[in-house]
Image (cartoon, rainbow, N blue to C red; front, side, top):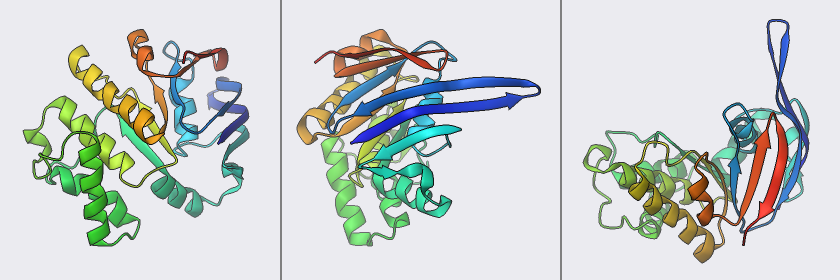
Length: 226
């Protein structure tokens, strides 16, 4: 499903070239739940941003279903990102003035979906994450774990090829984190959702099927655990 070939991302700071990624290669099969791990500065967030089409690689190829995303014009990249990829961030990124249902349906509306279809898919997504009884609550009336589940529902409402999660439990306590990670696991096992998650917590790995560990912009370990 995904092919990453010799991916590199270099930054220049003054006269210093920082090699955030320095030749990363791996494949991802449909339905894998992958944790990307490594110390701060290892390149894991840079990798996720490139895979999520938020950033550009300096060199190397990145393919999804044999489509080389490097060659897409910027407008097509944006449309692909909006319609084919899902994102969950550590800060939820919800709109406070909108209900849970409105927060989830907004991306479908932005992608020119009909209002009826957008609301139907939002209801379905909220039900999948266990929030079908809270569709009319605004974020201020939700707990941290509930806010993150709304963010997950928003990401999966458009049925993305891949769901990306960047430290999704960073702002949550361990009990709430486990609840959120169980939602990811359920989506992965019940619906065969491909998930790539950046985390630094070792105990999170009990929920995933594979761990890719980075150090200094290189993969030092790639291990399937299920």
